[in-house]
Image 1 (cartoon, rainbow, N blue to C red):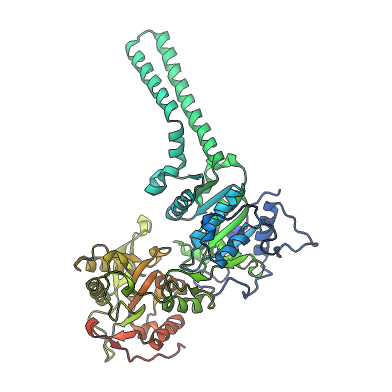
Image 2: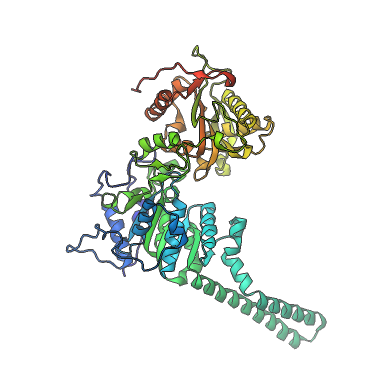
Length: 560
């Protein structure tokens, strides 16, 4: 088989660039990118890795019909919980005629459950699977789910960065447990030799005792090394972060049958190739309509590093290797339908079990205009058009996760919006909504810091989570409050301009979302204009004090 090299792929063409989002990139109605030589080479290399040959007699872009090459194992209990679309996606990804499968999982569509079923069936069929993700949290989530499904899993990586629940599955813990009796004996022998050394003064005897200590050390190292190899060889699934898949412990295992990369839309392309280089076939799972990889360097971003391999692979051979999950089980349809129409060409629908649920359905939560409304936008302007007190954006400073050389960065905050958020949380708590069910978000770190201070003054709000929009991707809460911050006449809306960030912000909620902002400013951006019109049409764009909300009279024009 031809070895797979990422040579030019890590520096591949960046598509539309780091600041643009392809609004529709998966499915049979995709725009063709055939002619992109790099994407063709990507597919060719994967075919060579899987042992297939590309020739003029056979078009490898045409996979056989689903079910034509069954895996040969019966469905597990996990499969019985999959819907029809999810099951079809699993079947497609397991079809060994496909060297590549791309699974787009819009918010709430059960992507992790699909991956667990896929990996479980692959392991049941005798395949060795490498599973990876860009973050430790995502890897540990897979570890816990796969272990609960009864698979022999090994988590490779620094135990200090592994979650408590996944710790027992780490390579180090499994090796330590396996060799514990032998190691205990070695430690006793070492203690005995050291005691003899303390009593012995004869040079030739001390020399022999020191030699015995060195031999024990070599035996200990060899035992640990051999057990590592054994634990890894017996694992059905090996899991690590993408960079962790490059660890030398995996070098002796040979090629895996299948590499599965979760959250591939948030991974840089070079990092993704580290995992793909270790397997014959690949499954990339994620969502290119959510936030892309985080890249600090502007030059790297402009060079295309924010374009994930998932995003490029979705378009290979006009999307024939891409499949989308189409039923979401998280949020009220009023939230998901707009996101589906704007981000996924209307292909994602809400399951009947969640389509109409609201906060008022929760035990102990009173019914009022807020708890029964899944979408709400609070206009931070008075009916006269003037802003509420202090609802203007201003410069702020915040500590963030940047390197020390630029750890303090200029950000923005809006004191008036923060106070409105605090008042809204107090109203939710009074209605009986548990504090732990609420999250308050903003795209600006300075506003996040301010919101945390405000929440400290709200009685009973200790469990309310305050976080940036970007850090909340992949998570969910019953109710989301989004503070937009931007309120100016000329400077635009900054971070809010990215459709993927708006998609993430809205789709974290199960029962309801409230947006705090100045619609006159937000409506200047086309996607926000469409969202605000959606709010207006559904009579959920309101203004005034929280105890006397009324329909907003604001009118929108299409942005120029």
